Length: 412
Image (cartoon, rainbow, N blue to C red; front, side, top):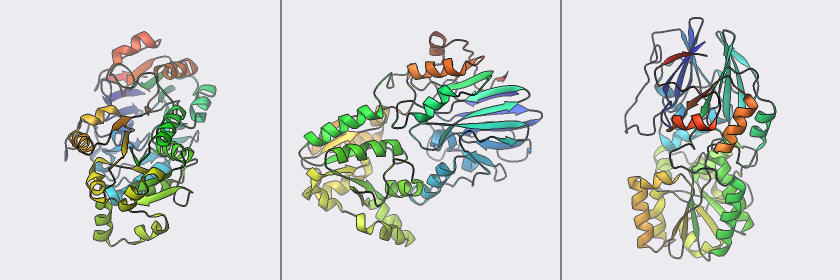
């Protein structure tokens, strides 16, 4: 079995890894680079990815984030995929709101430790915890060799059991481990707080603030939804989601994650969502949330009782409703996004209306100490950096590091 990283050896995002054995090939992830321009489809140079080469047998998607699966819709229609079934369902539900090209239905639904074969490749998924549910690490066996790809993972979420189980029952006899290092060397979060710590911080701020609290986080980060909801309930506040987030959570019905019908959970429609429903005449979507639906005008009247999810694009709606007076805004996303033009406009709008903006966040990626625990547990023959902007940092942190450049074939 031989491997080449197409993207990820020296950058975060756009991950794509090609494996070959016995005349057949598969891909591990096919992500959209984070720096891709609108309309750009930067496909890696993989024979058969856009058709014409039947030796490409499939694409194994570790999780639903766009930097790992965003280019899958642009692959040839005949190339099948493997993916978690809940993740697939979430992306299918998201299509109405995002307008993105859908992914094909998975030929191989990923389930924790349920193995399957793709040609000469024997695949075993290992469930991991990440800021996207239904995420997996992947053990690939072929030609008598074993490669373990961690995908994106962490150990400090609301459910520590996937990481605990991985440490206690790791894949055996791994010759090479492709391990993410998002937290290394690029001024991200470092070793930091857990979701439990964040929940306590948010609950404290929700209790202390006398008016409306607005919180921004990713709609597909259900673990953060759980954290914000539990903090809101601890502060005797209701949580109000936008329709997109409520729809995804209801479709997933993931353990521990609040969905429609949960006490203290409400829904509002952003202006864009209202227009999407009207254009599609899909009024069943609004009917489904009718009993839980609240309106931005209510936010100004009952602000001290509420925590409301927001996006930068929803601020004009809140301004019109008078909801920003006396409000607090909390950013619970990576700090790097605040440099984007839309987020810059958001910060100016908050300043104009006297709304303080605080940042309370927990990373979706493993801290260094947890990466080291995984290396000890798996004891791979080699540790290969991926999904990192600082591969040289691995040398001082882990044993048996072997770095490979994008595009370079190497033996497992």
